[in-house]
Length: 281
Image (cartoon, rainbow, N blue to C red; front, side, top):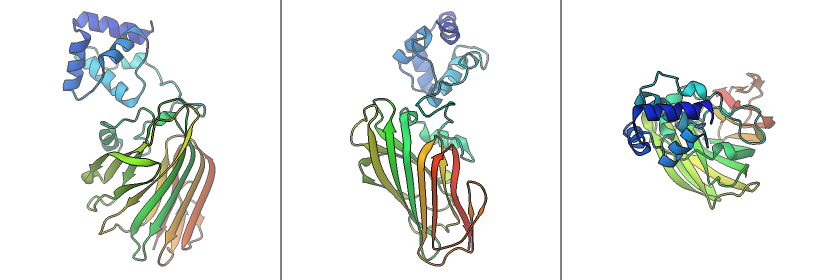
């Protein structure tokens, strides 16, 4: 039995709480953990690693009247997942200016499979209207399962203008729209794209979806794609239906790009970070 499991088991015994009561206390704090999971944790059969599980450990420390960090510090860094990863992946809220609203929006969504989807290709097609507003974004993902089970892709969209209506989400190919969380005050939209069936290990899927802005559409000054995990291929095409912008900057390295009515970014073996363009009119 590892240190975390032993410490958790001892704390539960000392507190005199059964697993059912412990589960109820967690539920009262807005944290859902099954009795089976709690049992696995205290016997060392499994460990908390995902974001929701690590948040549950913080609540457990409070419920079991332990000093802050008493259990968390015993976990160490998460174990890497997926054959491409040399280091543990960043949380899904990483690379966002304000991670907390993103974490809140993701709380009730099933994100357990995200680390098990290998990013083979990400292709974004952006249309900027003649009035210089963001009209629509179409995205195509090619994903491969590193284990049996993945059944969805989670989309996170942020708009800078919080007084603008959030875009509509449309599934275009090999997926349907599942749960959608909208946080207008944060300019945040999170949506599940459900596959037609769960993937088997080594199986791939191609999905497409679009985000369509509603009038009044926001003025377009940039497009960026955040990469939490390595991606073999990335293609971004921005099309301006009207005049080309006056100046353009590549977000990956801050270099100037020759303005035109079409901007194209093609990259291979993309590492975690941000790519895209920003422009001025």
